[in-house]
Amino acid sequence: MTEYDNVLDKEVEVDYKNSFVHKGMHVVDVTSSECGRFKYTKEESMKEYELTSAQYDFYNSVKQEI
Image 1 (cartoon, rainbow, N blue to C red):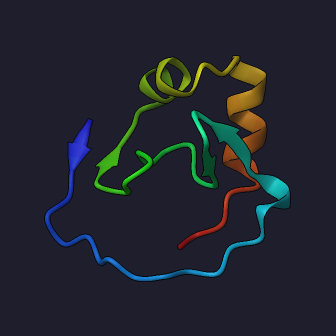
Image 2 (cartoon, helix red, strand yellow):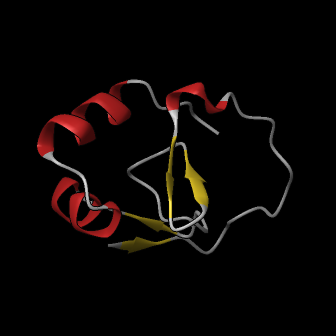
């Protein structure tokens, strides 16, 4: 897991049709933590968001860069 120090706290408009809900939060980028401060590897992301490999591949292919 990689931590970023330069995280901006700003409102972003996101198209939620390619997202999923995990613990009450919309996840639009499976490689980032919910707060956007950490970057996950595929294995970390699958564990954190309880995804199968196929689900991870799908959501990672449709993610939007924020």
